[in-house]
Image (tube, rainbow, N blue to C red; front, top):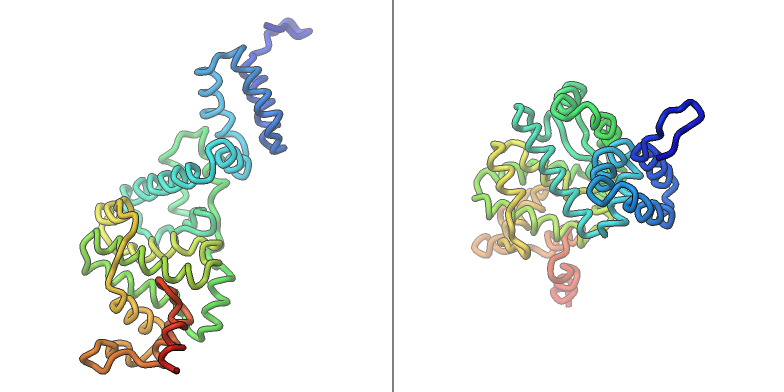
Amino acid sequence: MKINIFGQKKDPATTAKRQLIKALQRRNLAVIQTLVAQWQKILGVDKLTDLIVNQVMVECDADSHSWFLQTFLGQSQYEQMQQQAQNNVVQMLVNVGLELGKDFSFGLNSEIIISDRTQEILLSQVPANRQASLTSQIQSSPVPDEITAIEQQLGCAFFTNLTEIASQKVQLLSNSQAAAYLGVVIAGLVQRYPLLHKVDFPTKFIFGALAGLPPARVMAILNDQQTQPTFNEWIIFEDLLTALGDPESHRIAAEDGGISLEQLKKLDLVWCGDRRIAEIIARLEQ
């Protein structure tokens, strides 16, 4: 152990933490790997792991935190961990009586959009040494320009309308049905507009649709294990047309005359299933 000129011993863990945080801030993967190998020999694997998890990762900035996890865990594991962390935050907030869509919601890249009161409650639930890291992940602006641009093209508040419709729909469905309904709706919308992933629309839509449900149901739907959900697309088509403001959306069933060519053209503006609706339209017009 080294001794400085004042006769005080230098704590190797403190030095390791300082060096690792500096390397993280510079996104220098080679240096980080060298430091990890070096300090493992000095501190041991367990102590170094504890240092990285409970000190380095807590004290580094949010961007460095995300970069480190994505780099060392891989994108797939990082996304799974991020989703689990998000679910934990939701559970924490609903347990203290806060409501999804009212007291808090989720913005870009899973950042938390909350009121001042919710922020105080959230911070009171975590250790003092983690509060700065959590605060850095809170975002105040909930408006994604891409969604606004799409709604301007459509001429209506389509996503807002659809979220309200979905919120009413899931109240009538079982947990498994609700998870399937939301999954199929999101898949079709994102396939039609891939940029919706960029603004984290799936997360906002899900939490907006579940906002009125009891906490236990919210968590059950979020944790549903379906990997390839299926749902009656005709029900979804009716909801999409209603969200678009179509006055005849309730009459697309065969006994009511079936879906019209004009309605198919409207659906093609927002939806893409196993094949583009435009292909169906082209065949009908032939």
